[in-house]
Length: 329
Image 1 (cartoon, rainbow, N blue to C red):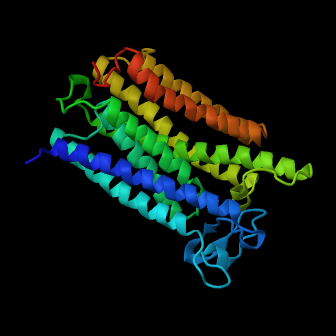
Image 2 (image 1 turned 90 degrees about the vertical axis):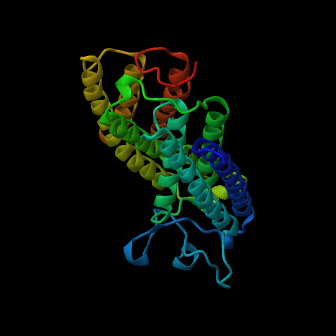
Image 3 (image 1 turned 60 degrees about the vertical axis):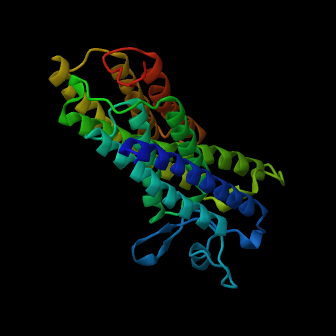
């Protein structure tokens, strides 16, 4: 009979395969959006409490379209629905894999790089699926599912380590709090990053339309909100993520005092956590007080998330320090 860790590995690769199916379905959805006629174009909308539609500025969507049906009552965006269904199924396998890993280890499953990747990608997909209950962001499905497949697949293939006991500095309640909150903020930054990429694409399309260019960009962009709406959503996700990241920084300092007798020591991991905080603080400050909006705002958001990925994939692997808990030899 396989042990719990073997079950965790099996269900994790199953989750990756299902997520890949979700990525393909969402890709077909973008192709369907690109080939839609002008009359068929539907723009995702914010679904307010009670089922009312709160459309973004410039959105042409009608209430009927927002509920996913056309004049004939035929369902719209069938591939997006399939992609979402597969994303939910993949997330359930992913959750089982994470839980069985935790039970096998007898602790929370985020004590090394492999486990952190499991939990981080689990929360990225969880935040995306939860947000879908309020805002139709299925046009981000290809990006989110693809990101999770790449990160989770890379972690499963390259970062896997067998279950090992915790080293002494990790035997703290702050392991539960600090790492979970950091993972949650990363998930919110991922959504903001995806929206910022779409904002840049939509901005280029709107600029080319203003110049009179007929084929202004990929056709699916016609079904997206305008740049102002995309930027506002990215900003809101970033603000919430920044609050969690600030708590991560503070909690890490308290944990460092408990483990090593000092709040701050310019360890490479501590330094990069602070760099990320500064980048997002600069983004929020520049946009809120300097009116630095549009493409510069989007690039700041993208730069911030690039630093997050660098912190995860490069700093954790190649830089040694007091936070060298990747588990890799």
